[in-house]
Amino acid sequence: MNTKTIPFSRDFVEEIEKTTPTPFYIYSEEGIRNAAKTQIEAFSWNPGFRNYFAVKASPNPNILKILAAEGLGADCSSLPEMIMAERVGLTGESIMFTSNDTPDEEFIKAMKLGAIINLDDITHIYSVERACGRLPELVSCRFNPGKAKKGNVIIGNPTEAKYGFTREQMFEGYSILKRKGVRRFGIHTMVASNELDAGYFVETAVIMLELVAELSSSLGISFEFVNLGGGIGIPYKPEQNPVDIKVVSSGIRGACRKYLESNGIPMPKIYMECGRMITGPYGWLVSRVRHIKKTYKTYAGLDACMANLMRPAIYGAYHHISVLGKESDTPSVKYDVTGSLCENNDKFAIDRMLPELSPGDIVVIHDAGAHGHAMGFNYNGKLRSAEWLMRTDGSAAMIRRPETVEDLFATICWDAV
Ligand SMILES: *Cc1c(COP(=O)(O)O)cnc(C)c1O
Image 1 (cartoon, protein in one colour):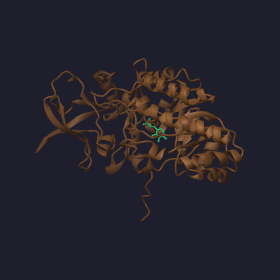
Image 2 (tube, protein in one colour; image 1 turned 180 degrees about the horizontal axis):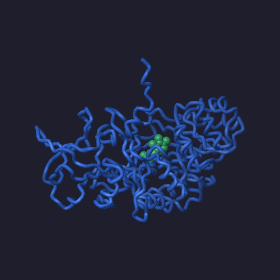
Image 3 (cartoon, helix red, strand yellow; image 1 turned 60 degrees about the vertical axis):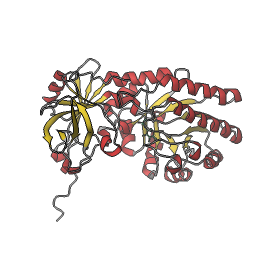
């Protein structure tokens, strides 16, 4: 069980509404900082442990700054993400560049920044060389374990996944890199998304550490880090439990002893690229009920729509919904909670029991802090909302203004015909 709490009051929301009307996102600085700290503390046995926050989860420089201050790096997969990381002062090996189907210009930027380049494919060894004129000093390769590992729903089966090197290619790839003079090595995998089973991450670590042991002895190289990717899930449903990061950590520690220490292989730094677990539970989409409609079903139409948060519409994902001021009312009415897109899957919830709603009620959609605003879009001329941060002192800071119609029109060539 986890209780779905809201750290802000109706007054806080109404204060924000004086500047930007609903819908908007609110993030909790305290929640985000604590999540970052908890993970670091759990891995304190591993000198050099670092989480490279997956920028795509919540690409706002203010959030990156807060996380950088907590010691996190940035996991980037595109040029704009690298530029954002650079602008908040993250450079060099504080940036992990984990991309796929990568354009040359991105390898060039990563190289200029001195970022850690994590290759998605064996041919990218040559792409980097061609694009940049040389290979970086430190290279990491992304492993796709294929049949050795079952995937999960969002990310799918590894043998069907476009990412990473096969096992044979890992041996060949590092041997090419070594021959070409690369002296520092890392290794990466990412096989889960929103996974709640702590054991899954330990199993992945075992696969990686066994591989590290084999690669080290057969190629005579050593690994500075093992990057286990992101994918630690969050309990979107009240009846789910959060992943106990201490259990993940101690399982990985045990695996390091078993597969590395006992074989005399030096302990690598453990890196992760978690996005969701750092910001997911600490972001809320705040919206007002616009209409209540009764036809074959009862609809609560919000002023937010799937363009603000598309996870329910595309994955059927559950997001808990609270009604401010009605937290202790009985959920007595069954609603489809909708947005205003001309698209019938524009629903935040289907057949959800909620307290009786009226137009004007403030509806709070939970666990929207990762892959929420970031996945927003402009279909139907919907404007992307503002983002607000509840600072640790309780004050509100706007960290992104809402889009305007002129923003939406900014790229149009009006007079082409
Ligand atoms: C999406 C992604 C992440 C972050 O995943 P979370 O589920 O947010 O932890 C990390 N690494 C890579 C390579 C990704 O594609």
